[in-house]
Image 1 (tube, one colour):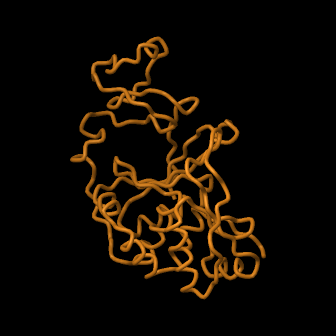
Image 2 (tube, rainbow, N blue to C red):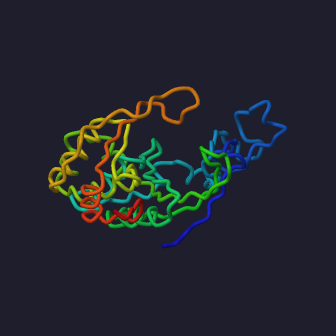
Image 3 (tube, one colour):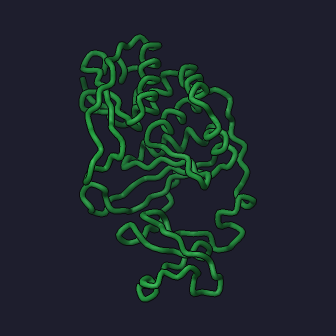
Length: 257
């Protein structure tokens, strides 16, 4: 897997030109200008920990006509179910049509990138250095990412019953992606702010012959907390947890039970 280094703004927050990538100088930051001081006259935007390695021309900068129109394979498949599991967890599809997964595990990012490649989406793994949300120290994050207008529009057009159909067609692969994304390694379980997603996980577990308890609220949102919504989880315990790990063989969050 090819690892591509990507620059990140110091401190995780900054302003960069939308077109040429030129950072905003400290002298001009107080005035917060709307346009770049260089000849390109591009608009500045907040990076907030994102990459400031921008396209060098107007044609390549968030121009939908310039984005390669990859035609992903959207037929039900193990790779699509795995990708759906990741996207139902920590993965995301942005308004700029980026399908991405950020993780501190290189093996997990490479696995997501490989699954996207099997869907005819040429994903790559980027290495980004950014401050940790917990400690504030600089940490290395691996980002599997690809930009696809067709996949992004398709995913956002899905209703919940269609996502369930994909997951229940290949429950093992869906659980594999969701566990690696939003699983709990300590007692083998799942956590999420969406009870519908946890309900779907329980249906997939039941289809594999694994019983699971009802999700319970364990974390409330509040000042100084990272979660903006109530968090729910359920734990499988030793015997059922071992059964799940033997079934899905995750690349991370593996615990000897």
